[in-house]
Length: 310
Image 1 (cartoon, rainbow, N blue to C red):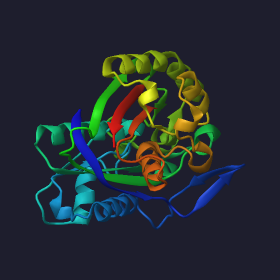
Image 2 (tube, helix red, strand yellow):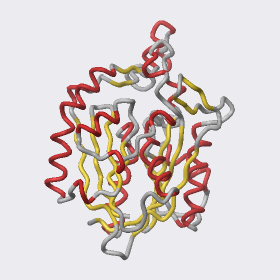
Image 3 (cartoon, rainbow, N blue to C red):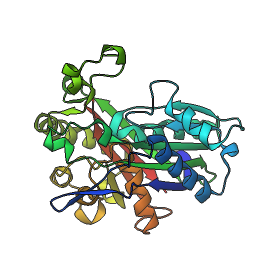
């Protein structure tokens, strides 16, 4: 057990909603920035935790696509929160599961005694990277932000029980944005290459890959961690697509102990897991002493799972 606890949380959801049939997607307004959304969630988390930004030891940015190439998104969030204090700031990126990876990293700092108070902030504006010619992805994504304050815990029964992460690089190009950094820098942009700067997904291939590798991945996690599926009060998965339900069925996750709100919110990229965790906490669906599983898949192909006792 890595002793830590969630002291506060916050979310930011654009008011503008777009409907595709009976499904709803939230898209950021033109006059609102990605950074605005992240800072909004972070400020809510700080207020909820009852602390000031100056109390933070570390800010971890956990967006799939940051605000700009440099400096890191965490530094830009910290700049908006305070110009004082002593916090370090850096980004952690495993695309859609970046929050889980960042929470894993944060728990290790806290358990080691290196830090006492860490802000993890996640969120993306996927709508600004979508290709309208790819209907499958264009109608899937929502914009959102979410943040949590994680602190050291004196309760030996609270914290991260276990975690696992693995990447299958044979599927690295199933979901990608090729342009924008050193492979295709901004000065090399040409209208003929516009699609390289937009999200590209082979959804069928990615889904088949996940169906192939995830059962063994989760079985191994349960065996190594000692966490039985029966011990879990709630599964909070990345809201990847409409295939989430069938995938969770395949993994044996009971319908009454999982979060599946893809129809109402879509794929929120890095914000999916923390946003849905915050909703579950606000609704009283889980609380102190409960074990929750945070899990998901991401570009790479990467899979994450983390068991957290609240």
